[in-house]
Image (cartoon, rainbow, N blue to C red; front, side):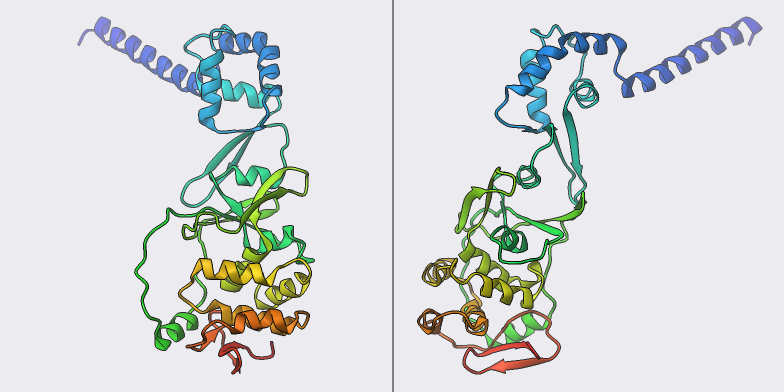
Amino acid sequence: MTLFRIGQSLTRLVHITMMYIYNIVMSGTMKESHLERLKIAKTDIVALFNAQTRRIFHYSEISQVLHDQRAFWRLTDSLTVQDFLEFLTQHTRMKEVRVNFPHRPVVRYTWGDVPLFELILSFQPNSYLSHYTAVYLHELTEQLPKTIYLNFEQRPKSYQMRGLQQGSIDAAFKRPMRTSKNVAPFRDFRICLLNSMGIGNLGVVEAPGPDGERIRLTNIEKTLIDITVRPGYAGGVFEVLKAYKTAKGKVSVNRLTALLKQLNYVYPYHQAIGFYLERAGVYDESAIKLLRKFNMDHDFYLAHGMKETDYSAQWRLFFPKGF
């Protein structure tokens, strides 16, 4: 090969390399022309987001805003959604919130600061706060739980009910309670996503949150049932008992038993609920009798994986020794 051709090849190689480096740099950085156009339109952009009734947005919603306003704001077609988001998060009140759950990260964009529970409820459609979080929001504990439980239901399924066998109950409750692995740290908390059976949001209400926001959570009756079923999601059986004690005057045992019948659990959780009501020492006998009306055909357990137990013959229930 002649020196001339070698020179041509080297020139082409240098050119290709420089273009490659340029493209890498430009792919991660907004072009100056895009930034200038966005700065010119900033007043209109800020005005649009200030006028929104909500302050939490999905990526797709930001993309739709850009699509709808691109011509009015005189932005070029080459400006991407990522360019737009980079500008919003660096030059306006828009903030990116990312929570790295094991299965799939959740990303939201907030216009300024938003209340914690309102933000978390945006992570899943039709979700609601439950278990220890609901206990806290109903003021049934003095603790500030460090795990926030966000529940979203599966699609309703039809199940063939099978007769309970004592051996199956014993084997199931000797094992530790199954817990969700879909947990991620967020600020000073852990967020635990629960994907419960589809029951049509039975026992779910809307109420004011701690910062005046509207939140969805289980009502007191459903909360007490939930933490009886899964005490590990409420700080354990001693915290559950405290919640039952504190709920006196707030909970309707009539509504609780009616809801329990609607839920139609396979396991006899009514035995554990009756035990808690009695052990709380604050409920009338007439209220406790509502739970005694249920059948008690099997021995049952207050919690999973108990090592040493005592037994209540009245409720046919094993509970932790010394409880």
